[in-house]
Image (cartoon, rainbow, N blue to C red; front, top):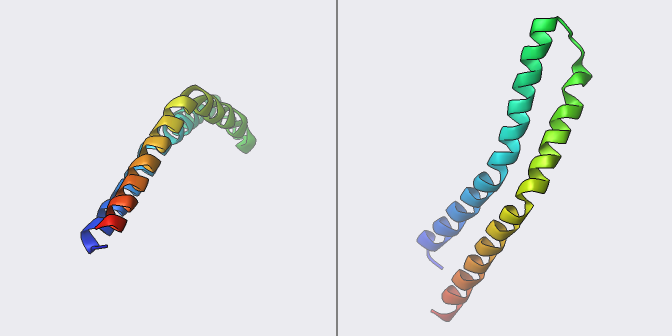
Length: 90
């Protein structure tokens, strides 16, 4: 196994993590921003107000994108196994 192969495997792993987690983190950030603007305009400074809507948005995003997330992870795993097989053969 060469340094290049290890680098490619690591890069693919990091990109897969970023691609899968970006929509989930983005929905949490968007809901947090909306609630922060609401809190600022109404002068409500309750810290727990942001927790429940963020959790609902994150869970909804996971539920809506679960098939895409699973498909992406399965494709990455298949490619990883093929790469391991290719490295083992040669």
